[in-house]
Amino acid sequence: MTLKKSLSMLLLAAGTLALGACASQKARYIDSNGPETVVSLNKVDIQDFQSATEALVADMLTWDAFAGAKKPVVALSRVVNDTTNNFDTALLTNQVQEAILKSRKAIISMSMSVDRNDDSVRQDVAALGGTETVVPDLTLIGKISEVTARADSMRQVSYVFSMRLVEAKTGNVVWMDSKTITKQGEKNSVGW
Image 1: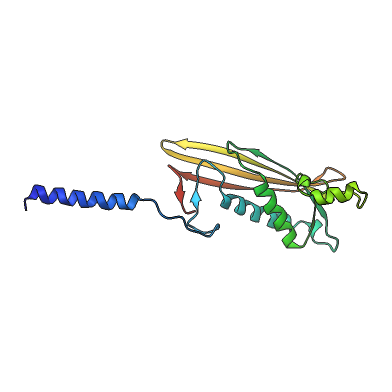
Image 2: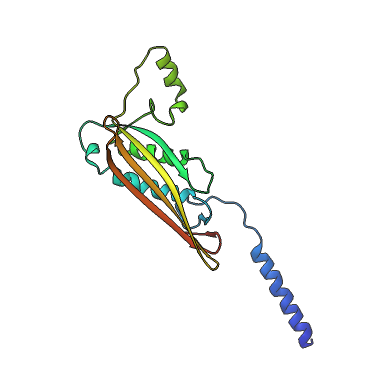
């Protein structure tokens, strides 16, 4: 076998291996919090919602209003999406409500929450005179902002998840915090 022919066969074999490595993987289940999740530079990912929610709610629940014997009634106000992404903010509000309820330190009120339209049975009962509207003690307001930067081919995007807890009667802000999630790279990747 000549050197030219051996080199050609070697290149052909290397090309075949490279194409095989580029072949798509079969769909499979992964852990939503695990290291195999897709990290998108240009959008808020599910793990971003989870990380922000866990940090913010954990800090919020250390506030004095959640320490007493009486559980405060919390209504969720709107969450503003101030990013270039189009996503359903209910992904965040649902996780926040779930975390608050699982803490057993507060009650979520649907009577004045932004999601009140989801509770059609309660609205029907109220229309028939079965219940009065519960006025919440606190309202929770949120905002997601985006800050981007670029250096040559390297891109960086930071998503800032901010929340404020406001006394409904006074309008006083009694707690606020933010969680910043920053991603950097040249393209989307797997793992975080």
